[in-house]
Image 1 (tube, rainbow, N blue to C red):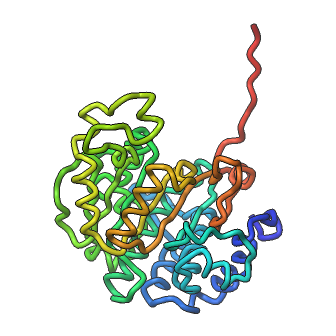
Image 2 (image 1 turned 180 degrees about the horizontal axis):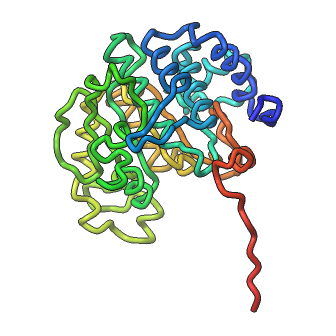
Image 3 (image 1 turned 120 degrees about the vertical axis):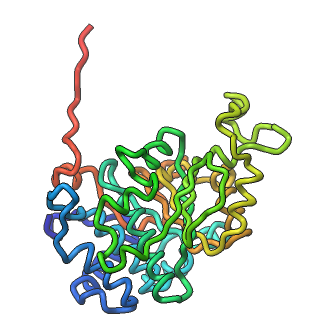
Length: 328
C-alpha cells in the first residue's frame, strides 16, 4: 500500500510521527541510532529471508511501522514519558501527570496483524543493544502480561507451535542476524514455573490474575468477588513469591497483550505495573491492542502507531468479514 493510500490518522502522536519516521527510514536509520539498531533494522527489512522449510518470509508493513515508530520514539527522540514525547513532537494531547511516571507506547494494530512479532522484535532490539552497546536505556529483563489464560497459552505455545515456549519464536523467524545467533540467551519463564532464571536475560510470561491473590485470601477485584477465589492450580506460584521475584529485576520492559484491559489506575493489572516500577524501575511499557480504549470509549493518548482493520483487509492480512443472517 502506498503512502497516498494510507488514511490520515486522527491520532496526534501518529500524525506527527509518520513523516518523521518515513524520513528517518529513507535516510538509512542513521540519525540517533546505535550500530546495533541499524543492523537489526537492515536485517529485518532490507535483506531477504527464508524459513527452515525453504519458504520466503517478509515482515508485514504493520509490523515494520510499529517497531520503527517505537525505536524512533525511544532511541532517536529519547522520550522517557508521554509529556516528553508530546513536547518533542509538538503534539497537543491531554496528559495526566499522576499517570506519566514512565515511558508508555501504545500500538493500535488490527487483530491478526502480528502484534506478537512486534513484541519479539522489541525484545531482540533491547537485548542486543544492552549486550553490545552497554548504554542506558536498554534492558535484558522483560515481563509479558496476558489478559487471561487463553491468551497466555497462545503466547506460550508448545513444542509444535512454539511462540515463546523455549524461545521458539526467535528460532522460527528471522529476528536475529546470523552472526549474532549464538549470542542470544533468553530464558522464558511461564506463569506457573517456580524457578530462577539460568540465562543472562529473562522474559516472564504471566497473566494478570497472578497479581490478584492476597496473602489473607481476600478478593482483590470485582471479578474475584463474583467468581470466588482462584483454584489452587492457578496460584501454584503465589502472588507474594511472584512479586518478590520480579522485584529483583531492574529496568524492566513490560509488554501488555490486549492492553485495553489495563486502562484504569484502580485496576489490579495497572497497580501491579506501578508496583513493578516502584520496586524495579521500568524501561518502558508497550501496550498492544486492536481497540486501545478506556471505559469511556476514548482511545489511549499514548498511541504511536495505527494499523486499521480496513488496511489489514486491503493488504489481505486478515480475511474480509462477512455478515450472516440466521432465519427462524
